[in-house]
Length: 399
Ligand SMILES: Cc1cc2nc3c(=O)[nH]c(=O)nc-3n(C[C@H](O)[C@H](O)[C@H](O)COP(=O)(O)OP(=O)(O)OC[C@H]3O[C@@H](n4cnc5c(N)ncnc54)[C@H](O)[C@@H]3O)c2cc1C
Image (cartoon, rainbow, N blue to C red; front, side, top):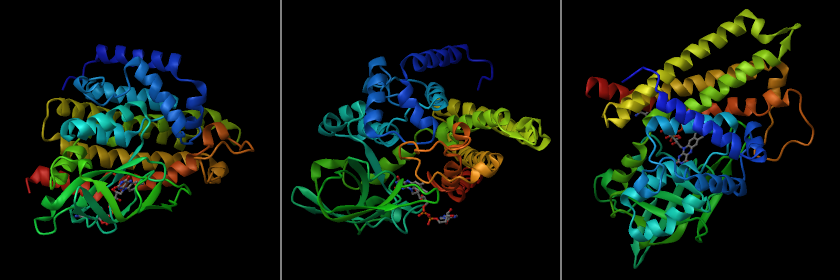
């Protein structure tokens, strides 16, 4: 890996910044900056703007209509978008499902779905985890039994992020109970409007509704919605989960929180002086800066390994996931504490429109406490820290 300044990448960063300055409408970024989530209409608008620039699918290869960017270019794009509060694209569709359809989808599936992902018209959710089958995903029990030209799906998924807003779900189901557990899993695409699907909300510790339980009761899914062959679901899942190790630390979000801490350092006074002038605050800020710099260097290294298709990128991604998510938690706790009494304001429903009454420290404080609570989950989602440690140990000791 080369640690010299990458002038090409710096020029690319400038290009992205200029594009965002000129093309990101104020009303699209405002909502994100105060910690609320964009409605579908705004996501579609942003997707259209990206499409006009040819940046509608930043994670896909050129031959599939994507940008063909390197891992580092994608990271730079994400960082700059996060810094200015651009609406995030439908990441489930863009980062997870899109590459799967490009690699394993039938021509009919590609024709049906890829254009809708591009337009932002069809939003997706991920139906993998079940009660009792999270870390041990291969033990999943949701059944899909063949009945003529349909599968009949029965079972339950849990922690389905944004299922209540999604149009379609990509689903892991058990199609064979007689074979080794991994070999009996298949990958289905299901329209959320199909009769028999029930979505129930789970309100998380941040007071928000991101998560759901999703129930399937005799849901009839056309056989044409099977991706790959029957029993290939595990192979497809490994492909899907093996993407983008360098992003595991969520560097764009870490940089954004650090910028928020710096803003707070200047903005908030305590006892007549800026927070930054307090020794403990300045010391902690310096520690965060050092930790973030170390993670950023590791990200660069993992990105280079990914470009080289090095098998060690997987375990390095696990190191990044642990270090990055622990830092997300520490930074959001620190932000909330630094707000003092204002940090106690919980803003229980940040997805809603702005609160009618402006709140004190709204510009730096809104949504911080929700974020702090939400990030408790960061060491669980995307594979728990314990599971990541097992991956590292297995790789290091060749277990
Ligand atoms: C905010 C959030 C969003 C999510 N979104 C989605 C989504 O959109 N779609 C989806 O399908 N899933 C989603 N998930 C589910 C997520 O993938 C699972 O929560 C995760 O895989 C852990 O599984 P589990 O919750 O069943 O915990 P379990 O696997 O039951 O783990 C419980 C505890 O046991 C530990 N443990 C388990 N196995 C081992 C082991 N072998 N060695 C050591 N320790 C172990 C774990 O580390 C954990 O501490 C989401 C979760 C969260 C929190």
